[in-house]
Length: 359
DNA sequence: CCCTCGATCAC
DNA sequence: CCTCATATCGAGGG
Image (cartoon, rainbow, N blue to C red):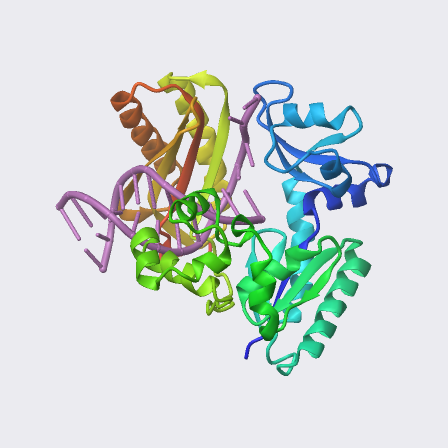
């Protein structure tokens, strides 16, 4: 039997900001992504607990959050490089405590600790306590941890008593533990899946157990269908797997104003292409696919992509192909765009020669 | 099997 | 009033 630990930082962005600026201590904080089209356009990325008490939630429009905040809350702009730097150190602490380590996003990770814990939940608990201690001491940040026999249970456990919590769910308790959550709180069940399940007459995990694996596969596809079937039974065989390098690099931005203008949009694409290349260039690889995303005023997103005959690592290629894809798209549809994005993927090793200087 | 594209989830 | 970034799946076409 495996023992899986899931660690999730508590309101990470806001907590880092609070730590960096003692004046903010205890205050409601909303860390926001400002889109720049007007004073308050954008969304809340993370709200700390005092802010949540005021009704400010992540994903919420900033203008809306400000109404809720009643002037009490502090609104900050995200400082991603700072959070990344802090995250790297935290992930180092987590990784050294794991047999197998899988980072998921900037502030959470799965740790397979089966060997280190000698298959003993008590040992796993000690490991989790040690991790929490070390992060608190070194970074002055809290996190929540969940321990279970699989990723699903561990993930649900870490979120169960946030913040600064540690929740153990032994195998015999897993089913009952999961059953207390409404379906939509289950990891992997979002609004769409919930709606379709409801239409099938499924309103709880218990109901879900009544549906056959075949039926779920027809409705949700093979993978997801099987996953749901297992989830209803507290089962999740997916392994903790180290994440390799990113397989896509993308950037998206909100236009200063809604636009149909090829030149204005083209300029935005140039900027994005440049930023994408900046992230990509330190890798010793080439990309083969360039894609663009166009999000209309109605917030409907469309994507277009092109895979090149031969791989490239030329920033101009990103720009050119992005423009080409977008121009073609805009010609075909009569749409006004709100946001645009550029991405590259399909990386392959660059076995190119060294430059003369290196040689 | 590869490519394109949309959908979904969730940070 | 509506951010940003990535992974994964599946359908449909070739």
